[in-house]
Image 1 (tube, rainbow, N blue to C red):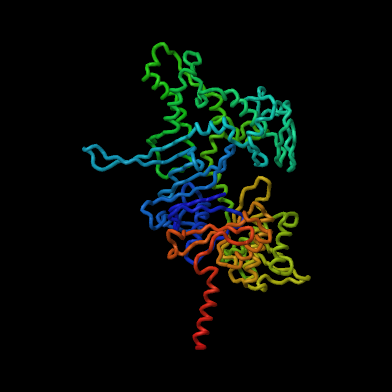
Image 2 (cartoon, rainbow, N blue to C red):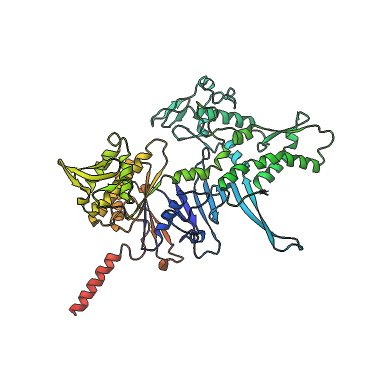
Length: 604
């Protein structure tokens, strides 16, 4: 997942963040490291309408969220879109004004596929009335031609509803089985599917050779081939049709006249779908952006017949001889806008949603992603011997979530915690006593003795909540089709000796290797964590793609050559792709030099 932002807080210029397994945010105090994590916490509470005055971020008014140097009171975010079928990586961009989403744009680096915007128009009243009047209108643009091209040019992937894995449509479509028997009516029918000799897709990494073709996936899933068969059927019937952009068949007096009137139809489609501007007379300010989009999405299609008829009248092609004019949705329309090709299930004929419905769903999918964002502050530690279940300390919350894990001994949880304790040389087994669902007593069981958690020392009390929170977060989303689960950790090195700071890097590597869907965003000033990650990368114990460092420069050092945020990677040999800003790695060297200089002056 990539998340970008512009004009939000310190981010006047565009900045993107690649959410890799380990993301480090570092830099001087007051350089803006927490701005990105505050954005995630803000959006977690809701994307359509921002909850600015509650939560840890507590931004207050919307103006406080906008970069203070900006005259335009809006900010943008973008994120990786979750689309089935498209091969190219699409990005969804949202523009916020007055505390709510006002614009959505979806596309790749070259082409815009979809745009929806709430637009406020202002006009002056006639001379006899003073003042101005404003009204809300909608701009809706659908690049339906580009979408159709993707299918006809086989520039799509087929995605398994079970495993979530992608297989190239171009490869699957060349398998020599008949598609004549597959149609919109029966492609979900088990009887129809089983009557065709589809290749099996095995749960292994071995390639299956069949009829000169190889298929390599990792999950048995027959849903690939019915979908491919249906797309093949539609594409093959229209591959030589010069009018493939037409979404309707045209009937005049029950006679199919599509070929002769297609150019006019496509012109109408372009005006309504690609250049559309809709006025909404009863739009209520404050309405949910996603709901407005959902209710508006199909309006242009409903106007196509009316506008098409008007064009025919203007061209004098619609006269008294025309008794009936009918536009019938053709197979291409049905494939893209009507058939529930995405996420369907064999056992439910009504399951799934259309390819086109993926566009308005992007905000909802992003909100679902953000629900898995969790935060652990620098005030996580506690030396209390007894903790209340309803207490306000973060340790209380973490312990309750840990105790609610029902399968601690039969999952990855116990081995993970044991290995983590070994890394930090914490002796014994962690246990929690609960009394009447009211209080909890955490302790270490060592050689038959119970050692209170409070007696471990404050440094260890800072580490244990991190271990438990990662165990809880990682356990929630274990599975083949699980999405990323983000844990933000603030200053994990707080109150730790340099040796233990270094071991935090070993622990973070253990965490992301144990829980592959876990993503750690770490706010830190620790040189030792970074140095150890470099060392582990050079030792080939950590992949170069597993870590991303973002260094935030102090404003005084930002210029045309030095950006506000530097993106730094770790090379295979452990070196860094960029240098840090002044006063980070070189601070100890500078102090040492100053001390030597002072001693030299005193001797003289």
